Length: 91
Image (tube, rainbow, N blue to C red; front, side):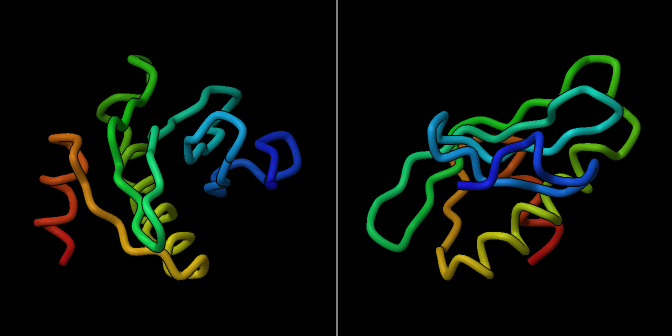
């Protein structure tokens, strides 16, 4: 398991103990809670701290999340409205 503390700032990690992807941005955490089903990962909720909203942090997070999921060989299924909208804009 990758731990958020071991990753450089701006890298998305998979915190399997909490069932969420995470990215540190200046000491704050952008995250997406998930549930796994076989080779599919359901994205349940994406959240950025209020102070990071409008900074592009969630967009960078989603880019990293998609890249990490591809490395892991898992298909992403967005259920969160933000993740659904982001994935429609970035097919």
